[in-house]
Image 1 (tube, rainbow, N blue to C red):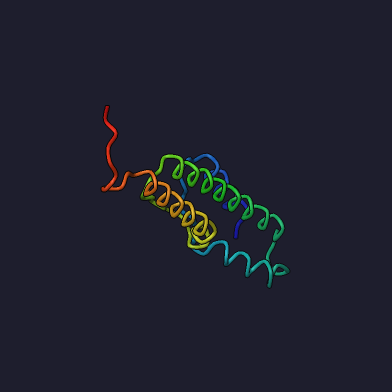
Image 2 (cartoon, rainbow, N blue to C red):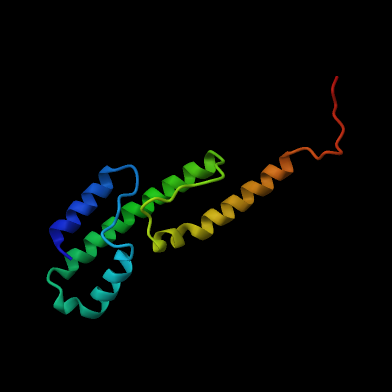
Length: 120
């Protein structure tokens, strides 16, 4: 947990449009555990907490934008490169519900096979 490295990670995450790889797939969980239970032993703990929160907020904002684009374009598949399980879990319920609603809307818009055509 080095402040300079975290600043570089934060800045890199902000500059890239896609998700950048994190140093650990459990970066958020580990940071929360360490800062909640051993912050007295960690130099610059408040700065580290702020930087990790900045990285988290940036990644969640990207995830929201990606999910919005995914739903608007009525996609059926998404590639989740460089996301951690905690980040996926944060938006999983929303995406599942959105996909279920899109499926229902699509099936309601498709004419049934027994429906008669009204050609003039």
